[in-house]
Length: 302
Image (cartoon, rainbow, N blue to C red; front, top):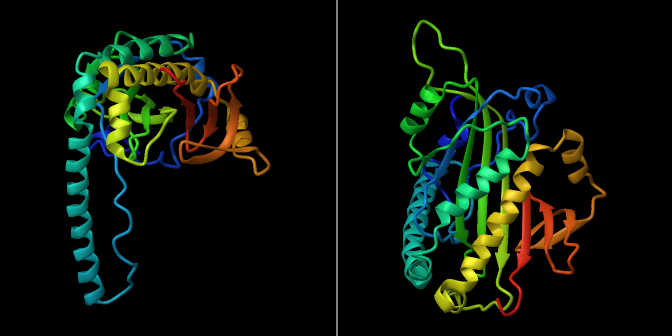
């Protein structure tokens, strides 16, 4: 797969990017860790507000064969698009108080500081000063590759959002390392091939959760967004802690995570192999669910 593949996946910026293709590794070979030459870094911060997500659910049965079945499927697909648009508008209205409460909270600065600390922790990665953009279009990423001037590149793309029931705040970092081929025939190089891709997610959930989404939003937004600010800070902190950990994983470790006899844990609606439990007595856990996922509950009184 060629090009800055992760950037291409994030260009449309869906709720979550597509899973990592099988031909892109979740671990880094020792020969690449041995390469300590500087790496150009693109930091994608595409959002200006916390986003929402929603579950449309199943709107049609599966059909197989025939023109009539095809027409039914297309009509159901259109119905799903309409439902998605309605849910998106409803979610936007519901989350509006939280947007107002977080208007003065600098998430970009938090993401920048998190990434800077995380990428400088492994001594071998040697990141150059970041190129920061909100634009996930292929043209921007092609320009980054063309002007990078380093054989290897790094891309970090963030998303932060609320769960469909508004009980969780989630921060997701998608990381890719890529090789930039040598220029040929004087033509500028505008594509690079990913050789590593990993996803890290930090989730913080409310201690007191309601079945009414507006109540959960009100809880996050209360006191000038005190809980939401604390949750975002904690989620970015865990993401920053886990980026170097993910960069250091070996194939044997991931194989161990997914071993059949591995202890499992349920957290934030996810069920996956347990990697660690918090040593501080809290309910925080780290699980494997197509990537590292850290989940904790915001303490009472926060």
